Image (cartoon, rainbow, N blue to C red; front, side):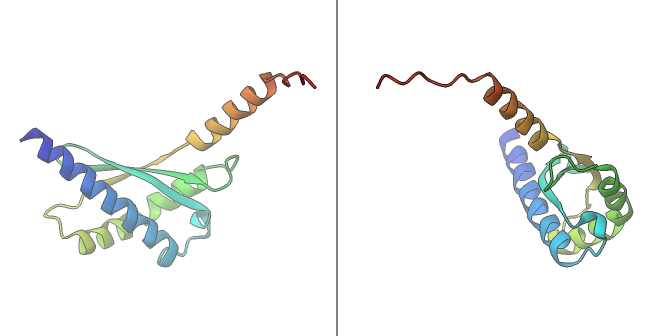
Amino acid sequence: MAGRGFARQLRVGAQMTRLLSELLQNEVKDPRLLDVRINEVDLSGDLGVARVYFSALQPDADMRPALEAFERAGGFLRSRLGQALQLRRVPELRFIADHSVRKAMELTAIIDSQRTPAKSTD
């Protein structure tokens, strides 16, 4: 029985990710959110809280303006999610900047800098 609840969390989280991405592209007009993408929505066990992870297309971008814009648009986004998902209770949205893209690029740069060229046997 516990597995069914977890599957529902994943299913609703995936739906929320898709819907929030569509809302960002089509309905949210705040210029601070133009280059922002939703990476994942992680729901609590009771579906009461949704942690929305987002990142900027430019990995070195300052995420604070986007976070402020999300906080301001949170009520609008939550109401639109409620209309689309038809849940009994729409989860509270908590927006979290995801820096994994930047960290991955930094790790790749470190690995590339440590790599020595292979010797040719020609």
